[in-house]
Amino acid sequence: MKLFFRYFLMELKSAMEYKLSFLLVALGQFIVSFSAFLGAVFLLQRFTSIKGYSMEMIMLCTASILLQYTLAECLGRGFDNFPSLVKSGKFDRILLRPQNTMLQVMGSRFEFTRIGRLLQAVILMAAGLNSANVVWSIGKIMTLIFMMIGGICLFIGIFIITASFCFFTIEGLEIFNVFTNGAVEFGKYPIAVFGKRILQFCTYIIPYALIQYYPLLYLMGKSNQTLLIWVPLLACLFLLPAVLIWQFGVKHYKSCGS
Amino acid sequence: MKQYIAFFRIRFINFLQYKTAAWAAVGTQFIWGMLELIVYSVFYDEGIGIFPMDFQALVDYIWLKQAFLSFFALWVLDSDILESIRDGSVAYELCRPIKLYEMWFSKCSASRLSKCSLRFIPILLAAMLIPGRFRMSLPADLQLFCLFIVSMAAALLIISACCMLIYAITFYLLAPNGITLVISSLADFLSGAVIPLMFFPEPLRRIAELLPFASMQDLPLRIYGGELAYMEAVHVILLQLFWVIVLIALGKWLLKQVLKRVVVQGG
Image 1 (cartoon, rainbow over the protein chains, first blue to last red):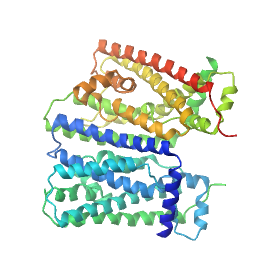
Image 2: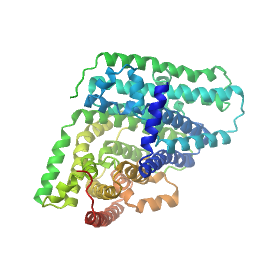
Image 3: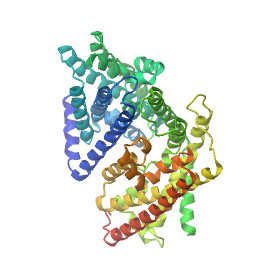
Image 4: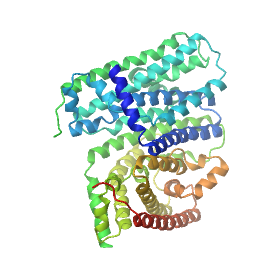
């Protein structure tokens, strides 16, 4: 843990060396996600609601997925860079060191430019919660915290699986974008909107619904089942197969660099 | 002229090599298009509000947008060119007896055309074969289809000219990722990549349609679905030609200013 913190500080210092570039990237990130949200707002203005879900629900869905994804990305961006580590053979160096391989890859990069998006997610979340007139209770605060924990674990799990595939394919695979960027793009809407099949997929296979749709139902008072408070924590289980796939990948790793 | 065509060909053939990347992109784009269509179909099923586009025209629009993503994507820039500006090897290019603008322009348009030529056929084929209401329709009218092709060609020129502007700005900043992201995300929104411009609220839509970004993507795609009548399509193409001339002139001027005082980095 201490080592992880050291990696973190090191990266922060190096990012601060390029201030203008840093600010522009942060601004760009903000525009990307804001324009996506604006698109949904324009559509809703025209059609007033989607399957009975109102503007507040959309705001909360957008904000929660965005927040979870951005936090996960800040921590786990090292995995995104992973194909180049494998391709250049630098992963060999990591294997030689007496430390956990996952920790080292994770620490290889932190993205601070995501602050633009983080800010937006927090503002949206506050605005959404405010206009939805949530009646606060300890259960609801817990739901919110669990949603964040579950979401971060889920997305980091996806990052790990994506990276693990590089052990076999060397190249990064674009198809995994569907599960990361796609989740942010389409997670603006409650997952139930996409129909029963996709909802089932997002509950049992890749549990997006556990960190977005179900807990938000409870948060907004549409459901009174207290079980829903604990549901987001189930998403953490997703890390388990992710770590197994990673370990399987490391075992089968053949160096290809020089 | 001959040497620029050669540059174009080299780039074009070069990118045809990446077959696996192309298949991965085909899969991604197809799933993305399906999800997008599901969202719209839910909106349309509810039936509240006014629909600015016919559902079938919207289906065509979305599939074309996905199929030609690598053609439209402004954020995908030539990393060789950006790297050569940063590390100073652009100096070699300047020594050659060719014009920098024309060379980069032909490279830029070739890589776009080549990347999308691998991708668009499988996506459109799948989109035309799937059953149900997400199926893409064949072009209704031959004349309009010809105008669509002309308009897409004009869009390619506008996109390449815009990339050239980004390269010229990179000479000042050296770190390209910030400025690229800001420009491309704005362009994305205003070109109809997020939602079609028809869904924008009224005054905003009119302004956006006149900007060069709409000419890059939104307007040509609308010609295909028959949303624009024959005369309107001709107007669109005239507007596109206007932007081609303005953007190329601006890019050439800017690059000339930059090269006058270029400081080569690195050694």
